[in-house]
Image (cartoon, rainbow, N blue to C red):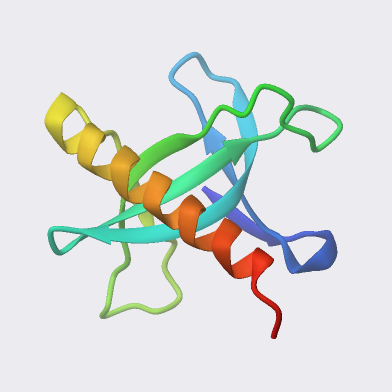
Length: 104
């Protein structure tokens, strides 16, 4: 997994998929649900766009002993756990939209 700085300070990660292909994803946010961190990723096409609105969720873990190591991502295989993360992400989006509507 590689992390890069993109235009407008957008962080991206390149994922190697099971079929051997790689996909660049924009990092939307990192959420904490039940003391576990999760990352929300927006897969991008070759034009650095996401036209279908698909978001991928993974468990997210950083090695606290080695700040230079890449974070580890792992699949969420439990449907109930996935639903909790999806609900937390929806709440995050609701808060973001509210913040955008409120003047400073």
